[in-house]
Image (cartoon, rainbow, N blue to C red; front, side, top):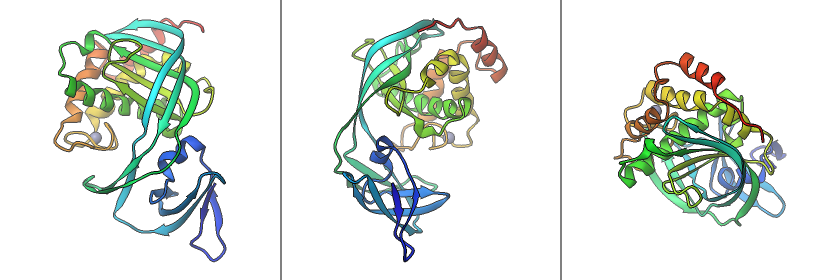
Length: 273
Ligand SMILES: [Zn+2]
């Protein structure tokens, strides 16, 4: 429960789930609510209450989760351009230990702070994409950036395709998944058990990947930004070019337009759980 203490009589301005709370309302976070900025003065984790205050600042905060994801069961999988798509049950452990302050517009790093919150475990469902041939011959550092950038764009496109809040899906990218022994992008559902989004993403895989490539290619930024490949954590790296190169290897023949991608998505075989 998010409580605004700015007025004389504090009022509840919203509720978010415990998983989202880890990254959005830790102490000293800037929480955005209806385009207004609120500083989180105090988070009472046990009481599930975040106390916030209206502010007007030139930065936002970004807390990265350290997520460990382990597939428990594969419900369906199928080969796809450059790799394999799948969905199934996973166990996610999420720990947040720090946040960054980033300047609006330039994403310049203005500092950081610690987050002291317990680890959360979540058993849920996920859609995943294993990059096989598409990731061959890459430098590990480049692949790391490409997977994360492509994953962020896929996360954004998934939210549009399924009409979700982007926070409903979490992202994990692994340069070498211990489970698949290959580079893997996971989109997991941020609620216990999942609500069927993963299977829908699996079915719309081609649209999802082609849409992510279109989103990045069409973005006005030069080398990646929060609107396409995500917050630029390493400003000297061209996340845009790397993510695009990877995605194009995963949508051979259907990058040209959303129409072709949609057709491929409809024609793709679907396997039942
Ligand atoms: Zn961009």
